[in-house]
Length: 458
Image (cartoon, rainbow, N blue to C red):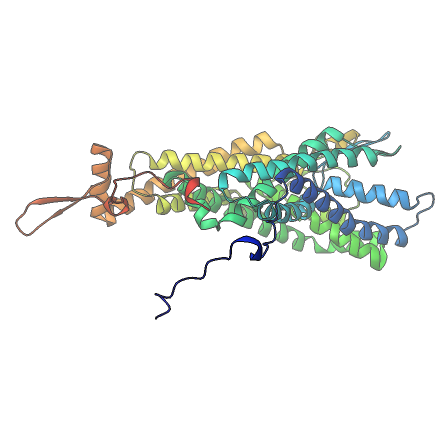
């Protein structure tokens, strides 16, 4: 008797049957989300409290006890969510470091993955419920921290804390939860080909703008390195203070990159009422004693003419790169629609730039420093026009060259325009015209031609 024909042993019936352990019931997703929200908040405070405590020990702290340290750490955690503060008799603080958002964003990303795995979420369409289960208690905790950290000197905004906490947790937690179910390639495959090419082109244009802005900010800081050292030595912070000051400057690096991008767009930005920093010239007033501000160009001739031209070309290069990527990722050539999709790529890029510009600035108290940073709507409009026009032209040229190099694609495009479905035409030996359906291999035996949807994921 072989192993394949040997009868399988059946479990014994009756009293002699071994008792199986009861199956473990998973906790509800709402409970797991609340646990994850508490852990993220507690972890963030545990990370930031030692930094505030080190500054409290190194600096004079007369009249400020440990409760003040805890309130400061809580306020710093809320500032990482871009929650503004109202200072007694000094206006409000809204220009907050964007780099601090990486800390809660990374923690919420991990929390979203943990909620999906421990909540036994197996469908992509259920990830939204998991993200909502994380974001709702997290927003409530952020509002409670804003109320608990209020003091006679500074008061964070509870409505901003609730809204910012909810949005950050929903986005970061949702992306982390979706990534826990499938890799980015399968998630991107859920998009139809045209929107996917639009996303790729927009990402390429933003990457060029971000790289150019980072290079511009670094070059400006290197050109004014002596002023940076002078301000840093004048503060005399000591070893601990120098370390904390360096961390603060690193947290403001994304703000500096956003300002440099807006500088390359043309309108520039302001640092106080009646001031402007633009490629054509700068007019600044007295600046706070912060070493990174030494990189700001001052005066009409502070930027050479050739450098101004090179800076102003950056948005057009970004648009051209995005337009070429869009055409290369497109499923089929589209002679008439390629420039329209290219301009749509610029519009999406302008929306992202406008949001970054709006969040990279803000008031620094009252008086003339109530207007600091670029204008969000101006940056969005100018970026849409400059990047969009360049992307439209580049997409049209790249699409034309693609059709000219490959006659099969040209016939496919003509078949798509005439029949609404792409067909590639070739000639056989007898001169007969043969039309080949390029999508025929994608159809199954049942003739189902529906694109993959969220149900195709686990």
